Length: 316
Image (tube, rainbow, N blue to C red; front, side, top):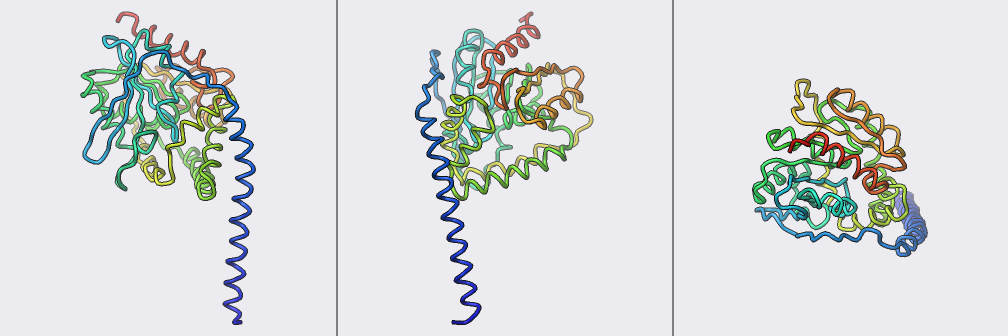
């Protein structure tokens, strides 16, 4: 047997052992986690009537959900990456008594499938505007979590006349360069892709554990990410296009910036810097909560957001 052939056979064998070993490792690790998920009792039942609607486009069908007071001001909630509209199940009942509430499955997430290779998450602002036109809504309070906070800012840049207020949880200022965040995100992307290759269950487990600290909440995030597939990942490649240095941006609307107390230090620091960039903004820490504090400590998140909205718009 020629030496080159032998080297190829050994290389293939070692690679196969690596693949098999990683699959076995993730199988054992995921099995324990899934048992915990299956044993969790659901605490996310919604009492409010929610209407499931779709925005039909030439290449996409965007799913969104409407509840609450038809004649009230509208709150639009935008979910974090890999999750879906159910990320806000603990907000629906609380805010629907006073507001019209809209949640959306963004491109490649939840029921809104990625329809072609040209679909990018940055297109969501245009789809949101069309949803508002369809629902005959002029202005909104937009609330975004993580990726949702970035899309919320992008929407405010493109359609400032439609913004009543903006609230960002677990986000950062997209109107300035974010080199440290970009570096951290590149490292995260490598971890995401590595886990995706071997096991989507491992990927979803990782996302759940990074997003929230409570076991029930981790189970909920895990379930909410089940429709995010490997092919969905391409919609995320447009995220870099959201961030740019825009020194002369004005903020004619109230801005609330929130961070979870137990989120990673970089995320909390980035939220604080966002607040420093915009002195008119309001910054608050949600105690006993991770990245998605609206799930980990829904009661405090809901109270803080409601207080902000009522204080800023009490005359309405």
